[in-house]
Image 1 (cartoon, rainbow, N blue to C red):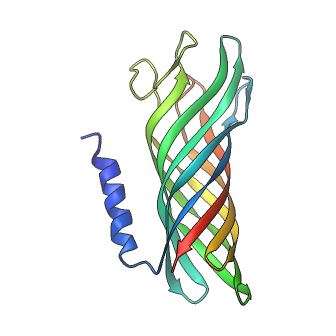
Image 2: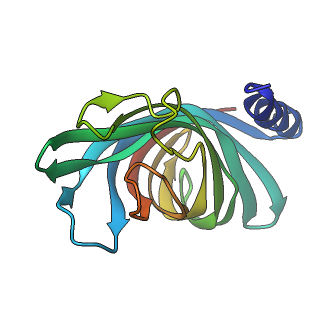
Length: 196
């Protein structure tokens, strides 16, 4: 039963890709942190993302960008007794509205915005004793498996190569700290290749 949500998400991507005119791969670095409304000592950390990218043209200059990505979000805790990197790994599905323009014969550019939906599959978070654990397997850690938020981004296409950047802000408390609301924030720098 735990696999039902990832299975449905994968089915959605496969179904969508059957209508897609562009299919590609994309990977890159994540510069991650969390929103922090209380005075606790947290700082940014690094992660990564990689996966299948799908682009579906809809209207002139407008496309829908989606895909299925493995992505790592998190932060660095500098708290006494909890000093180290906290990471949460997700299967990520963005649904971005893309506005595209042609800059030159082989060069294009775009801006994008839209929601994302994520399902947590692994993590390293601190328990009450300051030990890093997989929060999804530990009943004492109330880690939230579902994450959702919004992305805004931009990119440049050089024939089949895409360079892009996007910022994602979560609407969901990730649950890694008890009684403290922490929402994921991530800046993604990506390189992609789209097949003809």
